[in-house]
Amino acid sequence: MQFTRKTSYSRNIIGLFIKLILIAVVFIGIIFLLNKLDFPSPKKTIEKIIPNENFKIVK
Image 1 (cartoon, one colour):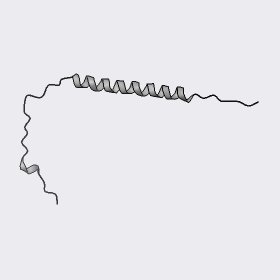
Image 2 (cartoon, one colour):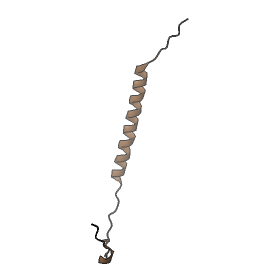
Image 3 (cartoon, helix red, strand yellow):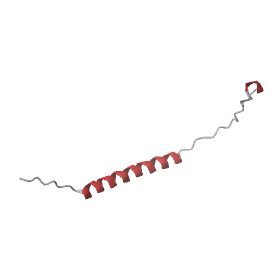
Image 4 (cartoon, one colour):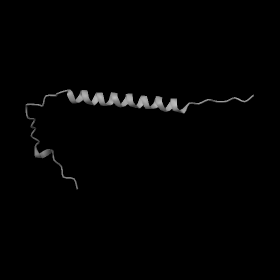
């Protein structure tokens, strides 16, 4: 008796294609939602004075 193995490559390809499309849609949705967020820019200018003593010359 000989066993035959039935494989369906088209079913695997279709399943993989659907998964890739779903991942792409989720990724594009995340990017779209992040672009919709409006983060306020800082109104106060950040200024820090660094004294010259902290600089070291490296040769």
